[in-house]
Image (cartoon, rainbow, N blue to C red; front, side, top):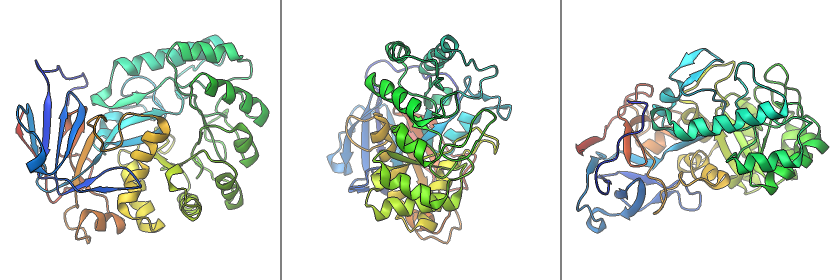
Length: 399
């Protein structure tokens, strides 16, 4: 697929998806919708329901889902981009396009920490953050929405620096702990400044991941009071269970579970949130690119693992990577609701899975087969080159 944005057609662009076998909403409170058809105009969902009730007149694109399931495009809450679709961490081109083939339509930067020669001085780190925010706002690799420009804070920063960043369009902080700020009191002061100016914060949790990072334990996490507890299952090394439990119970912030962390700790954190009846706090990321590489199917694998081993219904597991993240990150995607971005992934049971249905197969730990990925109503990927082949594949009837 082209890496450039598609040229919009003259007049309204109307996309209709029909013959959907299962509509997964992304919302924990109502994860399955009674619908088989969705319409979108100019990249926004306008109608959700049964075919007889949907106005398909004037459709410029008609997609036959062939009975496949439709879910919101998956959101990776924790990535480390650098420049376009290249990462120096593994010297790899096309990693974002590969994630698109894993159903990812939106990515959230936890800091551009792998940038060669990353500046640590205040002027330099602000310049890098603003530049990254602008670059990914202007260029979507394969159409994927990358929310970037996340500075790693340093002790010399003042409140004015956070105000400057916010006024320049920066809306995220990189993981607290990857820069020079590693103590609770300093982190708490700067996180409060960031929050004052509408900048959302995340903290590194667990043992060090790259040279220059360090151990961030429960005391620092709780005192810092960031909006999201980044990789609560470690990235890679997890805290002891007692500390994970303390964090879950000691704050009301987001609990992020990542692919590149400790899987046993991920299941422990999920159980803690479930027991507390606070599953809405759990979101998913990959923490890639990293030393363990790029995982194009990382979010799908987390969904299957948490469902199969964490006793979580598959339709709810999908919410952790869609609606939960969208609500916590204040995004306009991630939920099948009118007015939201028309970002979808169409998928079906993988061929020869032991599961009779898509949801059954996920509960058994299998990955679904992706047949199509749509961003802002535009088809960006058809049959995935990375997932196992699905039993059914959607087709484009009119384009």
